[in-house]
Amino acid sequence: MTEAMYFLSELREWGGQNALWALVKKGEIEIHSPHPEEWKRVSELMEKYKDTPMDLADASLVSLAELKGFRKILTLDSDFAVYRINGKEPFEIISLDSP
Image 1 (cartoon, rainbow, N blue to C red):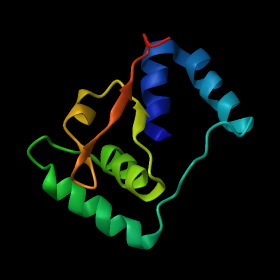
Image 2: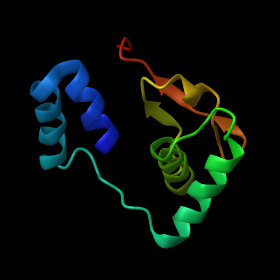
Image 3: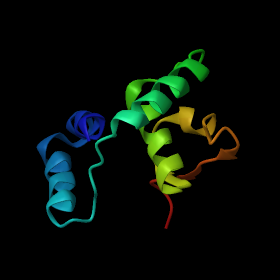
Image 4: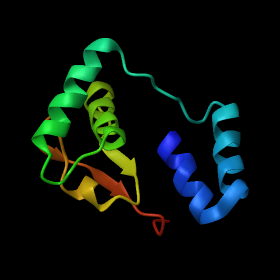
């Protein structure tokens, strides 16, 4: 959420941030707070992808995808083409240009 708000501020200013808040308020976006045991996986992912490098936000999203069984991701971050879910499956990246 923090990273999304930052990028929306840069790209669309308050209008973009307000649109994201609207989705949160409608319950269309769930904000997940990692449990203590998830932090271990986040740390492992950051170490595994240290040459990319993987930041905390990316590692948190990969860990959440593993936990929830998600494969699709909407991102502008090209590193998600490199990351693998459970070390095996690639993400299905949703493009902003997708219909």
